[in-house]
Image (cartoon, rainbow, N blue to C red; front, side):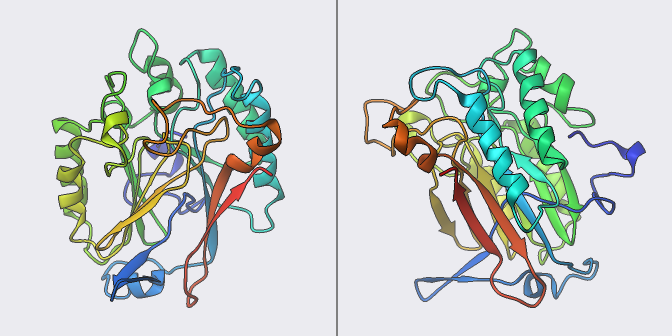
Amino acid sequence: MALDDNEGINRRGLLECVGWAGTGALYSLAGGSFGSISLDAALAASPRRQPVTPFSFLQISDSHIGFDKPANPDARGTFQAAVAKIGALADKPAFILHTGDISHLSRDAEFADADDIISAAGLPVFHVPGEHDMLDEGGGKAFLARYGKNTRGSGWYSFESNGVHFIALVNVADLKPGGMGHLGTEQLLWLKKDLAGVSSSTPVVVFAHIPLWTVYADWGWGTDDSAQALVLLRRFGSVTVLNGHIHQVIQKVEGTISFHSARSTAYPQPAPGSAPSPGPLKVPSGQLHAMLGIRTARIVPGRDPIALIDIDLA
């Protein structure tokens, strides 16, 4: 879903009409143990905060439409299963964040097929590209033509809803095989400007494809200039960073910044360093659905914590 000011959606007050959904949880680290921070508490000091109303939201990632190798000969079918899981949720999300690798080979027919499948959820969808979405000769031309309206550069943007500031970052442009993700000077300057008017008490959710922390450098599972972005984010009391790319759930907390990678809906990948290289991991067919999944989160004002739930397709 692109941002369109003519439809009443803008980067400073987005989704008054539809709400927000993505994946996130807010954590604090005290005395070596993790604890949740209520969104009400995080927003309490904000002079311009919006009232928080109960809502849930969802993250989906790495659908790889077009993939048909032995690790999963039917990535289209497992994506349909993931969307069916969304439709069956008792608490309907406000919208979906797709954190990249929508397609496998950046073909327009793959994007169209993915859109057709996810439309069954009946929810708005916000995208960032994965490296598999930028393989065409235009370096992401097909992705941007479909999803990049009113975004900047290679597809970055931000918006606010329910008193939370959301930032979509792109770290896969010109990605070299096995190389680290990269944000680049232009995007970092935009990020600094974007955050300048945001109160430090405003919770921030960042979503990108490749992790913004180094999970495993030998496989390129990290972003080489992420430290410059994280410096800009450290003044905020609650920051949640969501990513895909590594096809498994791994979490990390640094101060007020929590990092959450997500499962794929297409195929698993090996744990960091547990195989000669990353890539599609073939498991017994009866185990595949247990290694794929979606992520939901739910906010209820006055209740702790924000509920973050990873749901496998099994």
